[in-house]
Image (tube, rainbow, N blue to C red):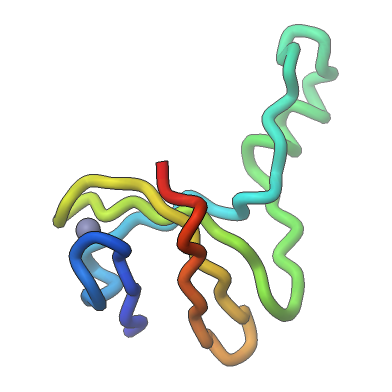
Length: 86
Ligand SMILES: [Zn+2]
């Protein structure tokens, strides 16, 4: 189980959060212009790199705010990203 550092609530158990995936992925500006394959790729696939990945997390069972962290996919080391909360 991971301990996720919410910028507003402090460190909390992973079970209080929903991970919304890689933060660096860009939503296509015109989804209607995308092929079905490209749109499905955006919706269902991630790059899943080995190493540090910036991710969106939602503190759904806490303050309900969104924020980003950098998480190493190998070691699960987590680094807060202060400027990324919205
Ligand atoms: Zn929180």
